[in-house]
Image (cartoon, rainbow, N blue to C red; front, side, top):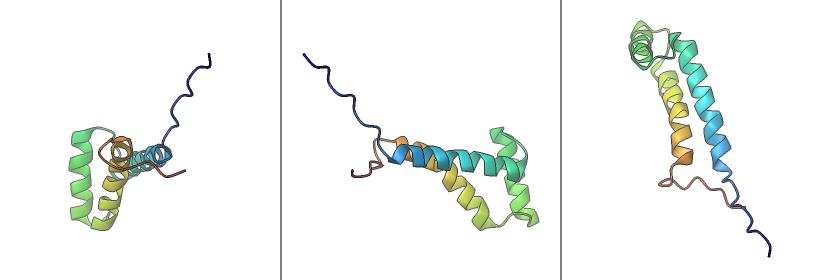
Length: 81
């Protein structure tokens, strides 16, 4: 009796993982910290001070959001084979 084939990994997950990695590294570059409170305070100061534009801050936050979004069952992250 043959063993069942394991399910394929959705192709959207590596994209989400890469986006999450880029977002985390980008936020560290922009704020100099990995702590949530420090990131929030430093990012707000950077945007208010003009060293980072609003668009860059939004892109970094969306990149961080890509990881959970790609793994969520509520978002169709599976790419058709």
